Length: 245
Image 1: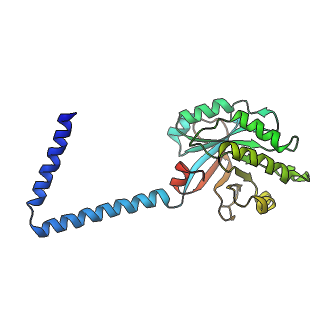
Image 2 (image 1 turned 60 degrees about the horizontal axis):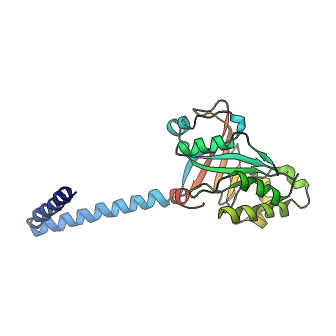
Image 3 (image 1 turned 180 degrees about the vertical axis):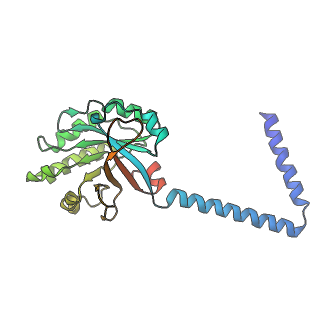
């Protein structure tokens, strides 16, 4: 170790000696060029990490059967996946645990979603989700899939609120609302400050501030038999990799 450090020290001492021997004008030009390069690198880094971009993802459940997560990670542009975990009060997706472990091991950013039902209370459904989905740092925020049928229940907004309260408190992240444009309009007043995962297979969402977009239900990817849902994240790379959206 001392030998290596000595060589590094000697390299920089020699470099400084050669720099000091240059004419003054040459030193000024060298310093200016170095500052320009550094400024360029800083600017590029800021653009790369903080400028809005899109990142390809997918969502899956037991309907896709066995998935080769290694093939997904290596042979497609997919970088994140949402997996169905639970539904209602007691249902757990048969392949959730296997998919969760496989996707994480392949290096994908992983999240889980709950299919909301009116057959049980929001509190009971939250307990089912919490008992099923691991609490891990760096994971995607939990998501809640709310279909149009729940609007038939007069207290569905309160049940959703009960569910969200418990899940958010447990995971320390605001849940993502997976909704259609119509459902978004129904929930906006009460949940306007929550991330939105919008469904639209025809055009890019016209909802301001959407975070995720499910743009296809007939995606074809290596490692998956049959069709799979495809999604896009919209935001900065920094928020995607280091924050909770």
